[in-house]
Length: 110
Length: 114
Image (cartoon, rainbow over all chains, first blue to last red; front, top):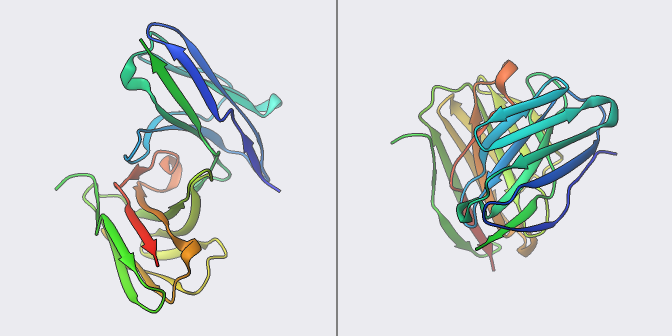
């Protein structure tokens, strides 16, 4: 079977740092993507890791360890607008669609 | 219009109705996707079209019928739906190939089957 596991909910305060983990078991792996979805909105692409290591994009960073079948999204200097659902998604092969996790709901409070 | 647009945004239909969802992308992409998003469940891939050819069909019931007349337009034809088909239906597009990990989603159609 294929599965992606991530926590269902995370809470944090403004200015804090939060890490959302994602472990995966899939028949084939080409890379790990992260998407953000605000309530009532469309998912939007945040980052992608095709190789092991850390990718940084502003306040957001994403990490991948293929040997551990594990990745995480790191959000720094949290803001209220970061309250949303965050999905990890595995790209099984080049040129094919993504398999999404169930998503992590992040709630940021003041 | 920019990005990915979907119409209608909301749809209520009876189980015997026939309706179609429309998706249009203005990004020059060559791959388009239909996803179903239900509460408490991950986004479920339904169909993938690459260069107007269906390349993936994830065991979707035949009451859902996709159509991709060109690389900018994607339709999902619905007939004889069941209440459990009520969900948010999302369309997405990507450049395909090596950048298919970066997909651009439309706002979705919220479908309610009564």
